Length: 112
Image 1 (cartoon, rainbow, N blue to C red):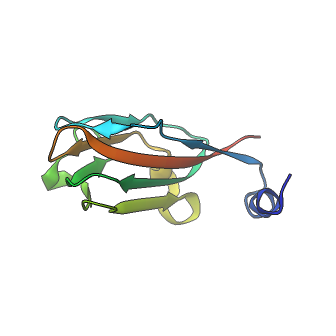
Image 2: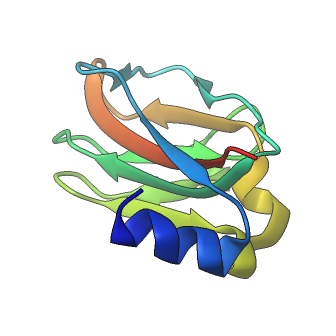
């Protein structure tokens, strides 16, 4: 176990593992589930890699009028359990203003 893993285990009291989006992950113009609910998720970061705006929501449907806006070309949102509480573990839905909008996500999952 490396130094970072030891620090995370000390802070969280559990071991964690990282899981990332598949290469080529995209969001379309219709709301769709990006990530399912996971009660073991302790942190999440989502980055908009596209030239389009992406909207996130912990409920379906994600929408421009009721979502978290990720600006084009690097807009991002990070969630962590001790600041965002149970919101980090919710389902996450997304939609974009243009088809085939590239997205990246990385989640830290407790692995007791």
